[in-house]
Length: 278
Image (cartoon, rainbow, N blue to C red):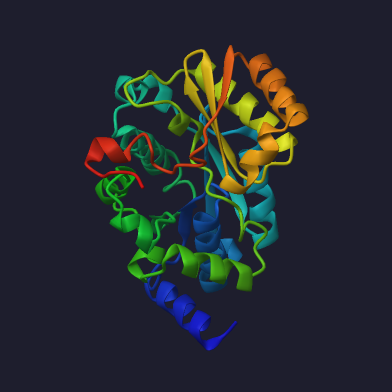
């Protein structure tokens, strides 16, 4: 690693000082994967546990990919079932939905894993850019549960995270962001297992057609497909469009719409917290 990247790793290590055994809330995304890898380098694999929350909001492909990343890192994965779907506040799907999801995860970790695995602390992969966003209510849950955020505290931006992940040869270094399936449902529309399953099946169709990044938003009978702007023309080609329509209808939707604005991160939440999405 270059001297600059070495300095970034040293800054993260400084925020793990005094921790003997660490649990990392792990999703397989680049942020939590980098945190897991740096924790293993700092503390040793025997002192780090990757904790993967499993519920209907986690796509099966994402679950498998997370295990593969952890295998490459050399970290042990412990799966824990979360039951955010039993919480009416989560199901109601307000702008604070992520708070209830993270609160459930961190509560389950506190109750089931801290003592069993003799953990001194739990950390999660918030980066410095995430810390500045107003649409991240999950950060409040982390604060309430005294969960560490070493990447953000060390000042690592998303760019820093990806550069470090590449330097460490993590297989997810260039993986697109993959928010949970519930993020595809407009706020104040209830989150249900059926809707989550429809979104998961529809997005599998998008991936199988070779689109590197894509999201399917759930609008009742309508599936709104968001792709990278460079992929819009291909998606509109008659053969590809026909396969998208056939596959997404098979997932339970009646209509399939291609959003010409492309992928819009935070589009449901940002307007509700007073930010205009650009």
